[in-house]
Length: 384
Image 1 (cartoon, rainbow, N blue to C red):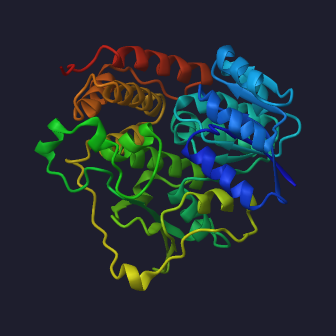
Image 2 (cartoon, rainbow, N blue to C red; image 1 turned 90 degrees about the horizontal axis):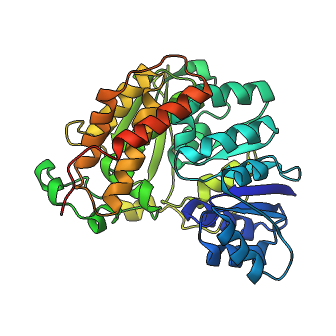
């Protein structure tokens, strides 16, 4: 039995992970769950999976769960609670599905405690990729990708020599606005931005998909996961989301992983690697699909993708500041206080005010993150 901790268990990735575990109850045991404030969903999960420990955003949510479940589960809360859960003795494998930069400290803690990491939290590597991969190497810990794109690359490189890779190609759906003209984006609503054509995801990731910042974060994540320079990491718009990413080798061969859009597939591969198990999912029918389409991304329509490449190449504290500014801008857009194009404008303004620091320590990254969030709260023009 592989013993699993899931951070973000009530979110999209977390719930898909639990569905995989349901299908293979003889293979996995849930020993820890962490969530924000969704006590109702956590109560259901605790009753079904009976973890040894849970963590919630605050004490109030914890008490609500403890008061409703039928057995005395150990419960912690807040940032310290996540760190406690990260080093839980009983756990072998941690699925990091927390949204945002909050995922970095517990990931480092889990690595130092010798846990295998199933990483669905892009911001962890965007903010601290060098530190995370260095710690993982030191601890002899695997960091396995859970994102569909990075899982596809991981699978396409399995059994191949990494030094024979010419480039990797991340595919992108293009998000809710992939076919919108640039001038129409100024009137885009929250509901329109959240209407992703292919995937069911959390609100923050869905907005990032609409700006294509999500793909920019994935580019930076890929740089650290696969140890490749940015000029060997490309992006293609692929509206059908069937080809999940590709790897081109020195001899011209291109390996791709294809499948219907279903996050349970990359989640299960991370949980069972290097094995594969049956999975109840819609089979791929290429004859029914008929055609697959690809095009180059338009960096003028999607400036966030260009910003991510620039910040990734600059390194130091620049990706941290970009990520923090984006998180705040997305929160403000979702709250109804900004126009959609203001997201990228805020990111650019915060970056323009930042004095980068090279070779940052962990405390430098947290300070850059704090500064960027505070600055981003006061940038941009509000709507309404």
